[in-house]
Image 1 (tube, rainbow, N blue to C red):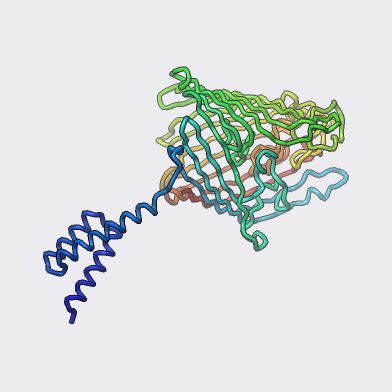
Image 2: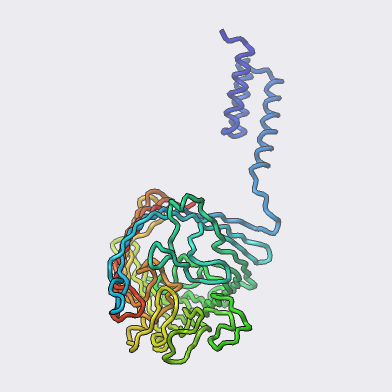
Length: 458
């Protein structure tokens, strides 16, 4: 039989457990009911209320994120992606090494974790950083934008195998930047940062965070322009830190940069139809060698002879009630003849073609995406076709998924994605590519790549 004291202890336990999840008003009402039933005395009830107040105060203090007074807000985000990839490829063969044309096959699992923090600071400053599993994808801050090759595939940009030789994954700083908005519409950023340009992966890999400086002017905010959205973006990105005292004449005595400028314009051309175009130009300051000189000097000349005109864009609308986007990208290297003649080092283009062709200098992409992926049950399908000339773009910073980033390639990318939940997406893509020119100029003959991704955002 339960005595009075046992009942009181049980009541105290019940109040304590409910207090952890109930509101203050709910807990007070429960205590009052126990007093009326005679289970608790008034003095005991007051003691319980006092202890509950003390506990809540302690928990509230412990659970608060203590930020410096200069921080106005902090946003934390991230994602985890598990990928299965199966691929096969043939190297471009020549008369001396016909065995290169043999088919190579590989399959593997990859894991990627990203964690980001974005700060809004006092006096119109902001900052942020990102941590990511170290897959050698974008290089350390201020040294290189290019990938580090591995033995897993020709592109070598995704080498985070789950086995990982029995070791833990390394975590690197994927980005770290400081920004300032001195006046509405004007933004300045320095450091390793999100890519600020409107682009496709034909020109910029979406997982590269360039290191350097960017400036942007939103004309709508800065000058009150209406009717059309206009933003001018400029970027100066550090690619290589060279030794200034280098005495040779290969431009290796100055730091290497990529300079990229773009005007992004968006306008509604009809009800529910939006057009975006983003003409741009990027160039480099490294390695302009004399015509016909090959082999190249003993220095990295991946960026040599790049003066590229760009014109990406899209038309966004609805088709049968589904959000639909028709997109394109165009690139033309004004210095493509020279780049083809002298070649460029790196794992994407290694030897020159004896006779440059018009297809070497240009790259283009046409695609469509139907649907979107925002909440549970959403789905999308996408497809694009591209041709990337041997000398058209920088093969060290373009997308690594299509033909491992090699130039002199053409082919299709097909994709589908479905939201298992608001934060979880299951997707698959299939890429098939062949070379454009059959002459041996350091490319691939063909590549087929299947990727299946399970991703969760948080």
